[in-house]
Length: 298
Image: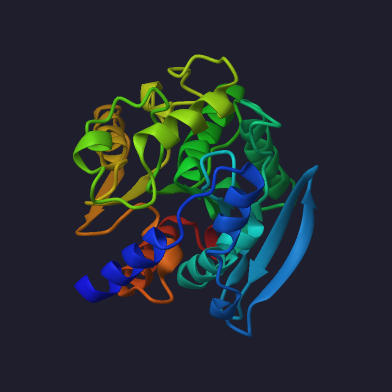
C-alpha cells in the first residue's frame, strides 16, 4: 500500500495545478485512463434531456439497473473523459449500466446550473422506464455533493428517490468549516483550502455557502435513501464526510461511512495503479448491487 500511494503522491506533486482555467481542466482530464477501459465495455454518447452524457455497459451488467455518476472537479473542471475509466469500473462492479453526466461547469454556469443538470439526468433515466429503486445516484468530490443535493431537490419536488446513494470523497460544505482542511493539508496533494475557496466562490456566484442545495451538509436529510460515504484518512475533506455521516445518521438515514487508511482525495481515480482504488470501487459496486432491486422485483 505505502509504495503505491506514495507513487501517486509523487506523480501529483510533479504535476502542479496551473493557474489558467483551461489548463486546469486539461490537467484533470489527463488523469483519465483510456487504457483502463476493458475492450468489452460499450460506451454510447447520449443526450439526457439536454445534458451531454454517456451510457456505459459491460457484458455482465443488467441494463435495467442504472448507476448515475457525477464527476468531480470542484464544479469548475472534470468531464466524461476524466472519469470514464472510474465509471466503467464502478458499473462492472455493481453489475449495472452507468450514465455519466457532463453537467455545466462554473464559472460560466454558476449554481444552480450543475444541480439542474443532475436532476434532469436522473429524471431522464426515469423516463427510460427504469424504476427508481433500480437507480443509484452517485458522485465523487464535488460530484458527491451534487448527487446529494440532487436527491434533496428531488425529494422537495416529490420525485421518487433512487435506491441508494454512493458518495466518494464528497464535498458537502462550501462554507469550508471542516477542521481537516487544516490538519490534513500536508497529507493531501490534490485539494487545499485556498483552492477550495476559489472553487466555492466561482460555483456559488454570490449564493449563500450554507444553502442546503449547494452545501447539503446543512440540509435536513430525513427520508433519503441508504448511502455509502467513502473517504480517505489523509483527505482535507475528511471532516466533510465524517460530519455528513453524523448528520445522516441523526436523521435516521441508513448510512455507511468507510474511512480508507492513508488514502488521499479522490483516490478512486488512480485505481489502475492503486490496489485501494480497486478495492474501494469493488466496495462501492457491492453496495450498489445490494441496494438496487433485482429485475423480478422491479
